[in-house]
Length: 133
Length: 275
Image (cartoon, rainbow over all chains, first blue to last red; front, side, top):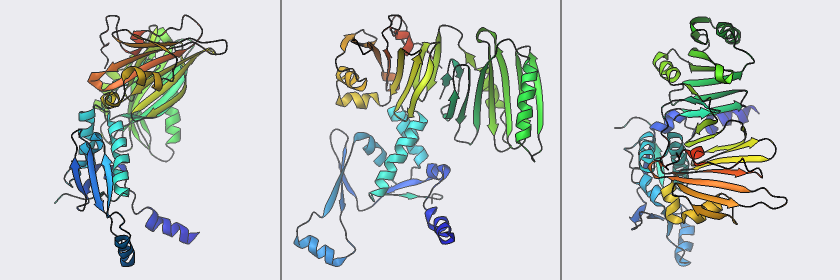
């Protein structure tokens, strides 16, 4: 039990951001992601699939498995994506989202938070925490 | 974000959002939080006769003082009139508030700004308190998370879903009438993919409804049968705010017919100005 609590204290809480930290965090795109913008404002992204295991890479090449993963973002997602440059904080992006789509603050923050979480889980962005250099 | 519940309206900035809402028309409590950890608390209570405002306030502050336990508790009350008083206290938290008796509704309303620190609350409280409005007419104002409707005063809140992008409140009027007020955000994005009429039919779950375009918006009527109630809905589009709003009434009583002013349109079709 004690170990479990210790584990939770060290590991479990390590990645949690409090709302204030989240507001100030700045999303930055994964540099390996390539994207093209469609006419309707949506975005097509390609991410190379890399395996750390060399034997798996060899199998993938021989089996002609796809070398990239594709993601499509709707115009609203594409709007957020353009600000994921490590310069704009989540707070700023939420404000821009609010102005562009006439959302209320809570709505903009909740949608942005959920969207960034999805991008982060897919390895498309990281969050920079701390002061800008 | 302005907030109105059972016709009690608070004019708040966009930084405020509801955290907790409890109670009914007679008695209730709402708490709104801001990005700076400040809170606004709204309490309302129906009384049989005009109360002594200062006594009510003393009782309320005594309860707060008891809860603050070891923290030193100080309070100050300023009685402005027979029906109005303001106060401040400092204990585990600091607060500034005001209490008001509304004779037309036999209602005591208390609005309080609270901070866990020592920040000054006087400007925030003054603004909130000065703009406090209580509806006493036949319609009560409801405004929360972008939903902004005026509904008959006899309604009680039933189920509610306060999600970002879609806000739904269901009201009941006795056993036989159900009123549902809904608000959808991102209207232009929704309507870029769907036809407005078809979208309304699907979103309001009225597949057999007759639709009439009434300039201001659309009216959907689905007649009831032996076991089902007649359902009438009004749907309005608000391009300026990029939202769609609807009121659906499920009732077999003819007096329960939704009106355009319920969803914020006056008779000539213009939007009613709200805070």
